[in-house]
Length: 253
Length: 253
Image (cartoon, rainbow over all chains, first blue to last red; front, side):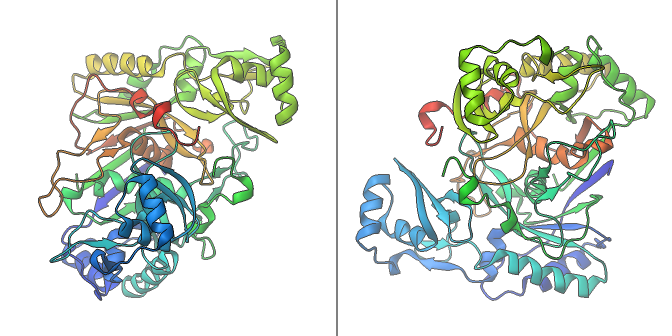
């Protein structure tokens, strides 16, 4: 694992509702003569998965209820946006001026439930929700691409999250398939042959952060990145949900 | 920025107190015929920086005071370890069974003040503290390597941190020099030519996480990773301290 490559896949077109994303990605790979290799990890931004799934909400169609109006007053946000955010959430973590941090229905804690207000879609104002079930989307995409290219790969679906104690966003995994999202290195001896004390690595998150170096600048328009040369055990059980810290071990929520 | 390489530098020997780390790294690069290129980022684990700086504490030499004894009872840790952790801290964030999360004197929030208890050093039990001033260490290393190889590079000093809401550790930057640790992309237009809403990227943290894919497995023994192919503006002012969320913007501390 001495040399790893991060390869942005060129030529992914703008994705619209109903697009068959595994098909689109497969064609882009073939057009660019990028041959998938055994154990490649494909990191795909959640944004294009959401777009393919048509996860748009027309802001003008939203009627906020009492709770949304109350929360919106506390954080000085559009009550319609707050209404959509709360609809994607199982609870509120923090409210402050211009900040609304929630427990997403998918189990992680993040600002605005990952609802994206930065993209337009034709006329009017539209919100883009995270994919319905990104772990399932990752699994489906993996199956299709394994079938098409005949090699074992893993798929990570990434989003950019802020952090409680650190400024700046970093890529994290909101979906994954085929690798240990949380990788227990307990079994591995350290340099001195003793067992490691620090055990669990946020492997899928490190992959998402690495891919962010290629795809992170939106102007580049590179929503799919191949990570090549990483050694990992194929894991058909683990998903990005493994990265969610259970409430009972959470000292901050 | 379509293709980025992560290259583990082979042949870094075990580092001991007083080692001239820029010299050691320079020699390893030359031995392995790895030619540094313009804008390469060198990610160096804090562990070898600490070792070169001799940041060892002999656990048997520590006499815990009343506060350390009280905190140690709360978290069921060795009072001598707690004493050392508190000596590196400006405050306590959370105490729980087997967990002690503090505000490190360097400004970030982390478990055990980054004090490492997993390595032995000859006889007895030793603790390894984080480097005295990792931003300064990064800057010094950068200057020496720029001088030696005659190309502009940046340096990141990495550590592995846990996260409040997510399981697993990921690489983060505890020191940096030569790049915008926190990168404000506000000026960049997105795909549609509008200004980006989400602005600050934890750039040095993403680099540290990416390098963790190569160096993260201790058995590999690869404490220095070259990241090649990343486009970034050279920045002689920014340091990893820019990534510390100021207390007034922190809703969780």
